[in-house]
Length: 305
View 1 (spheres, rainbow, N blue to C red):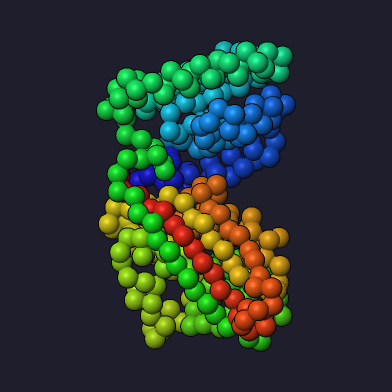
View 2: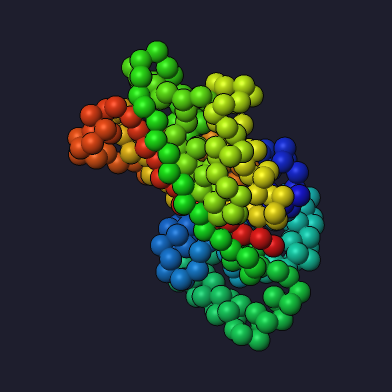
């Protein structure tokens, strides 16, 4: 089964994600320099940093063009490491990926030449003849897949009350009030579930997980989200990306956004980069402004192979 943009089992994928996070947080000087250029979209192509693919974690990858860029430190010149690099590159090339390899010194001291080589390679990969040949042999990856793409929108609202824990985006947030509901009342996850089901034309969260059922009483909404992902998979759909907004006067949501994204990514076997969560207030207007409740909005893209 495919998870995100990788071909591996779920357990391995989660381990790779954790390793990738550590690598992103501890880049080499050369990686940091090149990433500043790649992420700045100077090449007008979307690159990902340390993104798991087929059981491996390349330094940088453009999924649309299937281009991998590796920056090799001194240890890559050692015999055993060279053999491991060759095995990995051979495997990924069979999957349709092209490689560019640079040394740390080339990136740091011949930066303009390095960027020039990357630009020339991108232009070559973008030529119509080359793309026609490649797409015939290898289907596009990720959000660049050619196939059935659908968009869904979800909305949910819950009342704030005393004596309840506040769950948002799958994590518990310290607050004097919590959201009231049949389940844990995670308003953000519920909006995402509705958006996913709507995109797949599979009704809504209340239809599949009714608030009259004992099975869903006080249930962890992360379970509902996982089941929703499984439901849309029965029609062949996978998650592309999520753009969600939480509307609340208090507590401040922004300090918790990254943890929420990581939690949701784990539940859905998705890339954190494909989950956007924003927070806003109503400037003290309405029930949200009076701190009587919270609402959430979600837009999702799903696709079919």
